Each structure stands twice: as structure tokens, then as C-alpha cells.
Amino acid sequence: MPDSNSRKGEVLTQVLEKMLSGQKIAPSEFQDFVKAQNEGATTGLQVGEKIPDFALTDQNGNQRKFRDLNRALWPSSGLQSKRRLVTLL
Image (cartoon, rainbow, N blue to C red; front, side, top):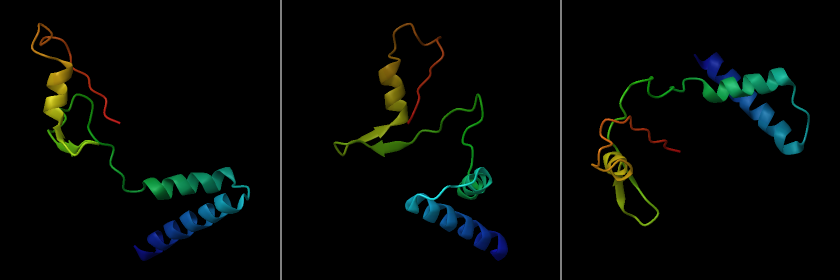
């Protein structure tokens, strides 16, 4: 779909140029800009779906796994029956 991609590119370019030059952006232009940015984006996990284990490097170069973070926040103390909630930003 080259037409769709080229239109998306035009929308992104035009709105960014307006932003950088301080020109007013119409609400419909901004709406098209947001749609062009988010086209094809996935929404992530569904409600109730478990987070797959993954590892990221922290600011000190250490590998941190989600399961380790989860254990650190909910140690084996009597909280196993409680729901676990971790927010990743």
C-alpha cells in the first residue's frame, strides 16, 4: 500500500513542520498525526494474560529479569495468595 504509506509520511512531515515552526495545527490534522504514528501498534497483553519472563539491563549494567523483580516485591512470606501487581514503565 504505497499510497497509504506515502499519505502517512506526508501527514507526519506536515504536522512536525508546523510544530517546529510554531504554526497552528487543526484538531483534524493532529488526529491524523496521532493515527499515523500509532498505525500498526499492538496493544500488548490482554487483561488476565501473564507477562512473559524477560530481562533488561539496568543502569549499572546488570541483567534484571522480571521474575526476579516480582520475587523481590513479593517475597515468600504469606503473601503468595495475594494478587501480584507490578507496573513497568
